[in-house]
Length: 469
Image 1 (cartoon, one colour):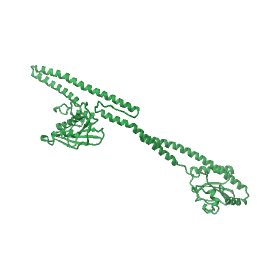
Image 2 (tube, helix red, strand yellow):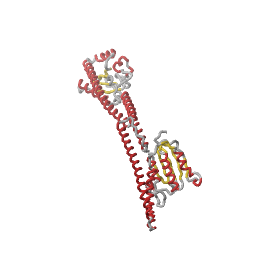
Image 3 (cartoon, one colour):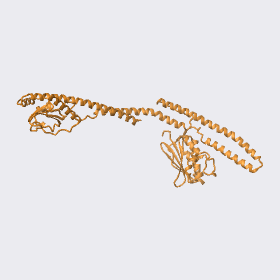
């Protein structure tokens, strides 16, 4: 959001500055052309005045004007047009030259031979001898051609009056039109864009932080609510009305989930009570059968039914999340689970590397059942269990590796389903991994499986840390 806001601000400022600069250039060009035309009218008046003088008086008048100073132009009479290096044409210089030429030809006649060009002060040549500007008396050129320290280009106009008589007029454009280059974006405007962008960026950053802070609290509360803390509710303070509404909806959802879990527990308890009575009654009636073969069949069917009922009840019991959240010493929990295998006949069957850096906010019995099921599965099907703990600031990770045959890749997710076993002769309800994953999910974590390249299965328990370090 910050980057998009900054990009939008820069684009808006860039477009507005481009429009403003285009208007500024058009206005300056119009002012430049008007100044050039005014200058050309003065030139035309001066040319008309010199043309009206007798030929012999013209040099005398020019000398008097130069000695008096204060004239707008530096003017001289030459017997030929002076050759000098002109500046490269630009849009502004071409507009000035065209405007001056048009006015002079309109005022003095279309057939008059006129040369108009811009020359650098260093390349300017004066009189027939080609004198430089700094070789003349300062009083002759100070008011007409001096604009220190800018030294702008000089507009040189040469007009043929008669055969062997050329009127030389050198002048400068008035301020602020002395430069012939296109104006770039002014420095104050660039500073204005940068300061505006920085101000909006900081303001937007504070606004985003103010709006996202209740969202972060809401996300943390949602993770904690997923652990089944019935007493906790989301308290949303600050933020927009949408954030408050999401908090209320989350509280409602949490209440519904709590009611659903309570009803589920009550339902399975009722089912277990209702089923055990007829199963027991059927067992008594089977004992009264005279046919032993038929009695064995009925007994086997009743055993399977009893196994299914016990498995379902165990699944509900072991994944029940109605337990208070408290700091859990995972090191103590792991040690309690692996200690029986670290001595006596079980020596070497279970190994443990690493340790938890600090307590974990969770449910002690549920976590103990979860990790215990993973160790039991590794010992039952892989003969050994090698535990590795990786505890970081954001999550707690436990790897449990065995030395068994592993699990076929296409059944890595299937083994989490209730009552699923890879081989029919395996003992148990087929609920261990499913219960472990459900407990991990209730803590916002996950249980994943991975076959090891050298053989065996790696079971990874990942539990995110939502508490502060």
